[in-house]
Length: 145
Image (cartoon, rainbow, N blue to C red):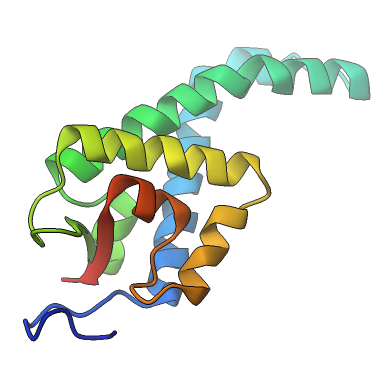
């Protein structure tokens, strides 16, 4: 299904989606490091202390990811990574802008996929519209711009 309903929309490749994923995760990681820099630099080499600090960052990281993906997909139709690789998120049903609620569902589904060993991302290899778990939850498709 590389063409959508005889329109000029073409599904984004898995390669471009993966590149956008890496760019977005690097950006979020960079933001988290900036925010928590003081805590990070005071970390000792004790593995127990490092693990405790990493656990301390879990909820803020998940919150930032949720807000980042929800807002950018809803407002711009793409995250920064998707904008750079020239792909866009659209609504599956009407091929238009994604609603705020669906972008929030998609963001929550993406976080769940990450938490469970990225299994939800594997659906993109086997579904007709290259939809991952979070695309199915958010009722979205990813297309080339």
